[in-house]
Length: 254
Image 1 (cartoon, rainbow, N blue to C red):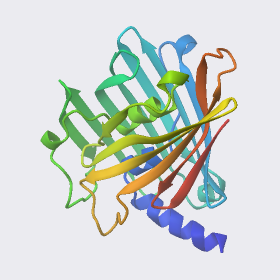
Image 2 (image 1 turned 90 degrees about the vertical axis):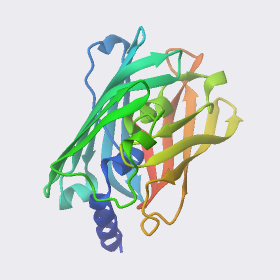
Image 3 (image 1 turned 120 degrees about the vertical axis):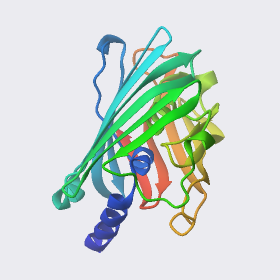
Image 4 (image 1 turned 45 degrees about the horizontal axis):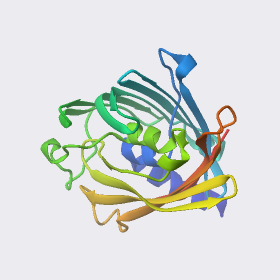
């Protein structure tokens, strides 16, 4: 039974774009200022099957931010194939939670293919989108001039996972694009129980998606916070879950 589930998961996994991986998994990190870096490491599973690890490092200094990340397949999925996705993003930050990416790079490697993508921004607009050796075929893809005021999946991943004061938890919304599609990230509900906080939200798939492949338009996510060990004024995500095309993905912080 598990083998059947795994084969289906692997088939969908390989068809997914870098966008789906970033919503469903991801990443390792290097940064110029590790002393001020925020580091993340998660174990990923679905249907009780571990399939990968995600590591990410992010730094904010003055009005600049940098993020780097790495996803690696592991567990039973790693027996069938080796998948690795490395990504990096940098840009400017306004205040505490407003991010304007400048450039985003991603590299995908598996036993079957390799791909690289590059997205450049200027004045809150995507001015360059490139995937080598060729972009994912998508008859519903949007033009880059339809994707103004968006941020990339890696930057929004950091925005969702970063440490926050209690007043800033479960607040804000973001428009997200990898270069072809448009997603809105919103918070729906905030719950506080003793020293833990839970945020429920949605990835709302707005435009650019094949309706035959994406039957659902809203994919729910859940973030669970606890107090940071070094600063009890801050809360950090210790686990999360979200719906995807391959089922509910759970991420446990290591």
